[in-house]
Structure formats: structure tokens, C-alpha cells
Image (cartoon, rainbow, N blue to C red; front, side):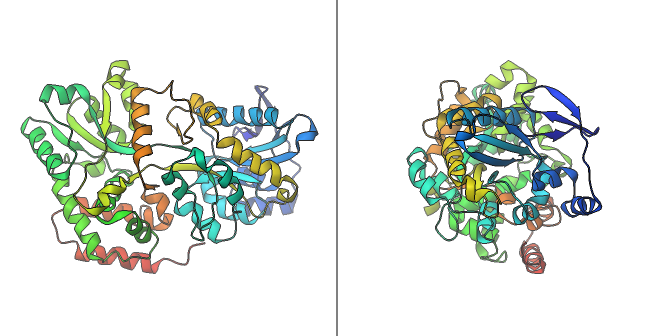
Length: 458
């Protein structure tokens, strides 16, 4: 991992455990540059400061940008940098890590300035946007050499609008319907595979005094997962991606039908969901007050915090079929992180070979296994990844992803951020959930008007 500021004028030195004073001789021009980038961390990332993994120079050089600032993923990337250098003749790797928020806020300016040779990012619309802007390099030759190690759904996730490939998938986590096995056993509840059985199960749980479906949407984004999956089951993957990117209208009757179908489920949510955080909604399932929860695999963190027994009792099933032609896609939200190669890196001309070697290195199950050891919430995407250390829950997650013919990246990654955020989709869905049975014509009109009012995406 690259150098990182600790907020006290010091800098962490990778692999040494040392924290040293940071002394930067900044000119007035540098200060202005920092202001332009929005933060000192972003300025350092763009202007070339960073730690170096040293080795022999026979392996060439490579510069890497990362947003993995959390302890587990950060350690995983550090270990992989070292493994890559060792496996490639002592390649000299310069790695910069920037805080998640700063990285996301500054990524557009960063890629247009002096970016690293390769950087980690999101698949889906976020990836395609930078490819369309000419800020990412196609890596078709890399993909041709590694594609046999990925499912067709993963392949779709890294394909650009122009048909070229722009990344290598590195990890993911699926969304599904989570529950406690002991609650289902006690209530003699059956796993539903279709919508009618799902609704009947909710009614049965309600009759037994349980909250059938827990929902916590205080942060705005959790409800987007339910909208996504109902839309996918009713209207398919292509409509989902076109709707999220403005190629379909929010006033379309197909959107109306999604809201009508959702209303059949929304009546089984607990009161006060708009003021409930996702963690608190998860605790309703942990404490056996709610029967089910539609969320991502990261919900297991709440069960782990409750103890070994609670975690062992956690299970899930794929969102039920709705009886449409699109059920066969088995599509689901499973946000995928990828490695991409920049277009405007000043060093890429000399480092192209090592940049492509880096992408190929990350396509290996053994490499992704190193990441998984340090960040077990991020499942490997490579087909040859060792699953012997997977828990039963993680193995099941890998299986449903393997059977999915289409993978979406969650609404806020598949759409533009200013539409998906608190002033847009988050707010619209909260309005909808206040009265799911109301006519949505006006709401859908507001959604389309808001989309139309947004400036061209930059």
C-alpha cells in the first residue's frame, strides 16, 4: 500500500511499521494545485508521491492507484503488490492509496490529470463512463487471455458500450433475502421460489407476530436494492441499465408496474423504516423480531457482532421469480470491483507491459485469495479461486453468482451519482415508501423531470 497521511503531519511508510514526519516544500503554485484537487491526499495521488516496493529494475516499473483505505483491504493490496513484484522479476511498484470519499470525489479530475498506470474502480456504468470519456484504455488482449477464468456475467460487467473490455473483475458481494435458519425451523416456514409463495410467507409470518420483511432506509440507498431486483425480474437486465442511464423514461408504464408489484411487499415492512439504519434493521432479524431482510452479504457483519451462534444461523435465498421471461436471467445486484488501465498516465507508455501483467495477476484465483484472507467480506471473482476456506454462506453466495446470467452493480453504481443520491432516487423512493399504494404518476413525473434537469455528466 502506498503512503498515507495520518492527519498529524506525518506519513505511514509501508512494510516498515514506521510513521515519519511529512515535510513538503510546497510552492504557491502547489498550493493552488491542492485547492484544485480538493484535498492534499488527492494532490499527492495525482502528482506522484507514493511508496515504492523496491526490487531489481529488470522487472520494469508500474504505478498503481487505489481507494482501499480500510485496514483489511489495504493490507490485502499491500501483500499483493509485494507478491506481484516478486513474481515479475522485482518490478518496481509505486502504489498510492487515497481515502474512499476523496478518491470518488476527485476521480474525474485525477484521470484527466496525471493518473497512475492502473487503478481500482467499479464496474457497470461507472466503468463505462470513463471508457466513453477516453480516460480508460481497452484491455481486450488481457481479457482474451484470462476470460476462461470468469463467468459470462462477469464478462458483461467489464464490457464497454463500444464492445471493448476495460477491466478485470477482482471481488464482489451479492444481494439476496437473508434470514435465520432457526426462525424458519421454528415457524415451519418454507423457502419461497416464486412471488406468490413469497407473499404468502410474509402473511404467515405476520400472523405469527413477526415483522415479515425488515427495512432500514435512513441512509437512502437500501431501498434501491429492492427496486433493482423487482425491476430486473419484471423488465430484465437491458431495461435496468437503460433506465439507470436515461435511455428509458421514468414515466414508462414498466416502472409503474414495478411500483405496483413492490406495494404488495411493502405492506409487510415495519413502521418507521425511514428513520431506521440498515444495521438496526439487520438487528431485528438477528434478535428474531423480523423474519427476512433484502440486503447484501455484508449483513453478515451484524450477525458476526452478535456472536458465533448467530452467524452460524444466518442463511439466504435468491429473490423469488416473478413469472416473467426475465426470471431466466437470474439477474441480481452483486457490486463488482475491478482493476482498470488509464489512458493518460505519463508513464504508461513505458509501463504498459507491467500494467497488463498486473491485470492478469489479479485475474488469478490465488491472487484474489490473498485479498480474501485479509477482507473476507469481498468474495473472489475468479473461477479457480480456492473456496476451501469459504464458510457455507460464502460458498452459497459464490454459487448464486455462478448461476446468474446477468449481474448488476446496484443502482447507485449503474446510474449517475447525482441522480442516485439524496436529492434524487434516494428521496423519491422514501416518498414512495411513505404510501406505496398511492398512484405513482406524479412521483414518476418528478423523477423524469429531475433527470431532465441534470447537466451533462462530466
